[in-house]
Image (cartoon, rainbow, N blue to C red; front, side):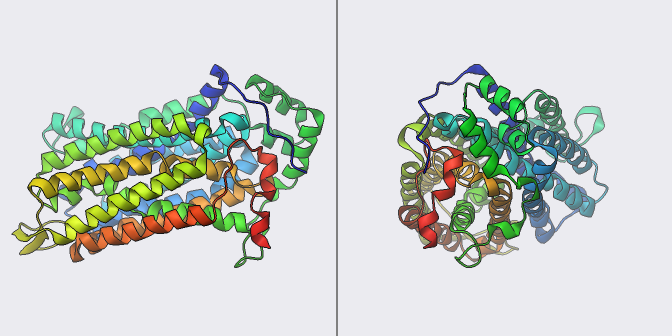
Length: 484
C-alpha cells in the first residue's frame, strides 16, 4: 500500500544550495553543447572544413553524450553521486583544453567526443541526485534548477562567443596572448568546470545511495540537514527498494511491453520526443537558419541571443509553476503551443518566395533559398521565439524532472541512463539531419518538427501520469496498470 504523501515542505537555504551545486553540471552541459555555435567560423577558417566535416564537428559531441549517459548510472552507483560529478568536471576541463588545441580537425572531433561524455554524465547524475535528496513537495522546483542551469549555460556560451569574437574582430582572429578567438571560446569553459569540481566536494552523498550501502545513520543525517525527517519504517522501505542497485543491469528493465517495463518506454519516449520537436536546431544552427531566409549575420546573432534570454525566462516560469499546477498540465500546454508555433513556421518557410543568394553551408552556388521580409519575417520571428517559450516552460525542464523522479528506486539509475542515452541519440539524429533537410526546404524540416509536436501532445494526453508530490518509493506502481 502506498504511503501517504508527505506534508508540505518549505524551501531552506541548505537544500537550495545542495541542488544548485548539482545543477552546475547542467550549466556545463548547456555551455559545452552550444559553445561550438560561435566557434564554427574560426574552425572553418583554421582547418578549411567542408560542410560535412563542419556538421560532424558540431554533432559528434552528441555521440559522446549518448555514451556518457548510458554509463553514468553505473558509475554513480559504484562511486557515489558527488564523486561522479567530480569525474565529469575533470572530463569537462580536459575536453575544453583539448578542443582549444586539437592539432587538426580530426583531433577536434575527438575532443568534442570526450566533452560529450561529460555532458551525458551530467545530464544523468544531476536530475537523479536532486530527485533523491529533495523533499517530494519541492522536487519539481528543485529539479527545474537543472534546466535553468542548462539554458543559462546555453545563453552564456552564445554571449561569451559573441563577446570574444567582437573583441577580437572575428572568431578566426588572434586575441589574448596571440591565441585565436575561437580557441578562447573553448578555454573559457575551464573556469566553471573548476568551480563545479570544488563545489561537488561540498555536498553530501545521496541519502538513498547511502541506504543502499547500509549507511542508514548517515542517510538520516543528510535527510535531516535538508529538512526531511523519516522514520525507521520509511528508511527500511527505502533500503528494501534500493537492494541490488549497485548491480543494476539493463536486463533489470525487462518487461512485457516490447521487452521493457512500461515506465521505461514512457521515459524513452519522453526523451526522444523532447528532441524530435527540433528545439536544438534553434541553438545549434540559429545563425544558419536565419541567414538562410534573408537575415544578415549580425541580425542572426542578435536573434540567437534573444532566443536564449527567452529560454531563461521560460524556465523561471516553469520553476514557479511546476509544483503548483503539476508536470502533466505544463507538458500539455507546451505541446499545444509548440504545435501551433511550428506549424506557422513551416507554413511561412514553405510559402516564402525563392531567391538566388550566395553559397552557404547548406547549398553551393547558385543557391536558391526562401526569403522572408516584412510581415512574414516578423511572424516567423514571433513563431520561433514562441516555440522557444512554450518549450522552455514545459518540455525543457519538465522532462528532466520526470526522468529524475518517475522511475522506482531499484531501477532509477540504469533506467535514467537508458532514457538519457536515447535522448542524445535523438538529438544527434535531429542535428545531423537538419542541414540536408534545410537544403531540401525549411518548410519540410519544420513540418516534420510540427508533426512530432502534435505527437507529443497526444502522448502526454494518453500515457503520461502526474508525479507531483509523490514519494520516490511509491513510483514502482505509477505505471503498473500499463503492463496489464
